[in-house]
Length: 354
Length: 89
Image 1 (cartoon, each protein chain N blue to C red):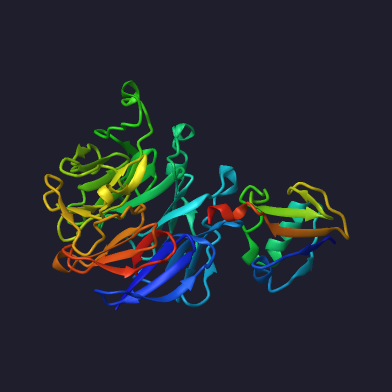
Image 2 (image 1 turned 45 degrees about the vertical axis):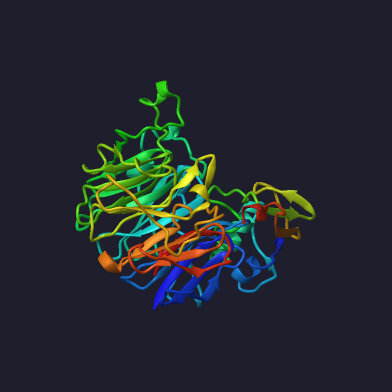
């Protein structure tokens, strides 16, 4: 039995099923509120949901039973001395040491928990970056959305911020390096591209078996780094479009990545009215469209940044994504074939395998 | 003390209390007293800077006010969601 946590504009849906075929809605929580992101920490079994009320603001909620009562984690908020307010909690990631969790939020801040997500502390090394006052938000805000841990090395961490590029630490977050070499921000005039700080990273995936390798979906561009983010190589050749939001990979194959191209920043829907997942198994040299079982006619879907996830690896890799049209699709065979796990949900903001 | 009137979901977070008498000389102080008495309300009405959230309205004796507004014993505070707040959802 698989469990999918689907954050939507109208609450959290917990889907359960075996697949292929429709999953059942086991639970709906936070009706009426936007659930931007939800995940389960497999170590503790604890569920987390980023919930934003249109009236009462954003908050991190947690529970051990998504059908039961949820608790607020109030320390995931901006400390008073920052004179900032929490706008949105974008992502929660499991850390590399027991009970460690990371949270990325708007306004471009990183929080760390050392007690399994019950209490949180702002990472001051990133918050106090001297260039911060010059940071520009993307369309979705000044969002820290990508947190890529380094397997077995808890001191090393990579971040993606829209629109402030990638940031890397090797000392547990005390200091950070800003790395954007090779990224081409086409939305900036050519004569400003070398000096701009506006690098709109959309999502990062680190290959666990080769942690120096990162894949990136950029705001117009798909890139790979083989040196921990120091240099970025354009790997978009062969794709129908280089615009999109999420990117994931197969943990068993460091040459793999999966993306879902959309037309362009001015037209954020699947290309040619076809829903296709593009797969590379040679680190971006070639791409293969995977669409068996997906809508490939008159289908103009938008798949958001956190709405694509995986479970398993190798031949049993599972892939799962949702769209703002309210559909959730799944594959149990590494993208060879797909099925509809849910339809007619509210607009999907995030999908995570519990 | 001023009297604060709450609706769901704030009422539920305040132990099911529809009306509460809470100490404070300003709207912000009264709402901080609410948070201290009922911690589950923390962050729902006031943001981290102590301001009333953009899509929440606080009325004192029928007049919409901010966190700095002075209140006196017997004043009636009503906390209501703004009609604009649903746009994000």
